[in-house]
Image 1 (cartoon, rainbow over the protein chains, first blue to last red):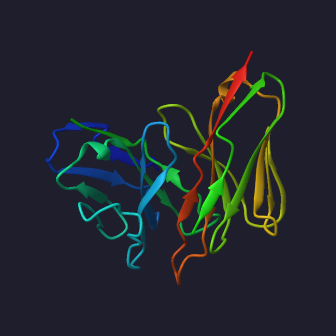
Image 2: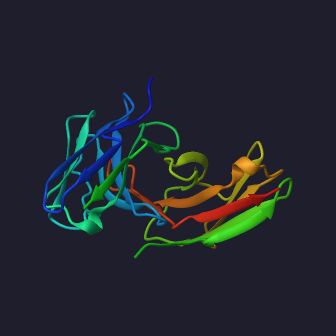
Length: 114
Length: 114
């Protein structure tokens, strides 16, 4: 079916506001990942969901960041009280439960905190 | 900790062959991935190695030596469209039923000149 989709594609917000980013994984993919990519930098792991297992939250940079996933479908990444250093592209990826489990990435959400 | 190293930049001319190296030190190993990322776009999957040796896929090949913690991506018959960032990523061993998260290098920016 369709690939990974993310919304919004761009978000400009004022410092201190909360934002919510959405990811729709490929149907049937059991694993879902969130990454952050600052300009000119590599991918920074944030959080990983796998089926009914407890999520791996080890990459979340602070308690202002949280993420939820409904079953094996939509996930939302919430950033509270945004700071300028949160400005980045937030990428979501999903992978299946078969094969090499390569991750398929969505187009990302570009977040700008002013 | 986890450490993935790859060169920051490389240049080559059209029609040439280029080899992008990646060395890694991770607490566990469950596969090595190469991704291509064009500017402003999401990463796309190129190759996967879990056993030692060479995997060939068209103009792209990827090699893995687990004992040396080393991989390379070989691009043949370079084309202008190959100008992109190439990301090396290692998956750790996972826990129980989980697949394991990916640790990404910072990427190698390849520029192909006419």
